[in-house]
Length: 74
Image (cartoon, rainbow, N blue to C red; front, side):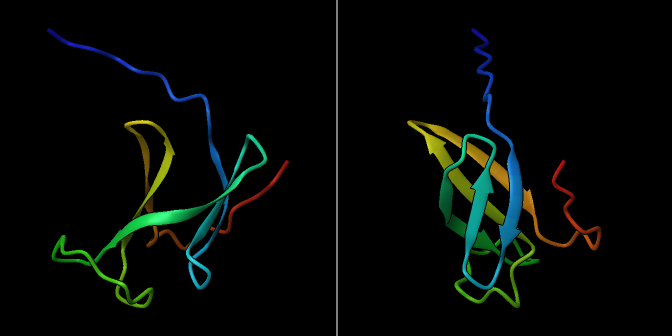
């Protein structure tokens, strides 16, 4: 059985130093977890290449923290 769930929330702005993500629903959420290049959990934002943000019960967004492109808000 395959189940698809649509998450209708986007991450608009990421602050790695504060470990937060501002989302399209107007809520700033703390990172649930961060991971380093070896896919190991880390607390060091300088080592993190990905972060997980919890947006609901059993709903998460994985963020790529290595992207050098600035985030634009329209």
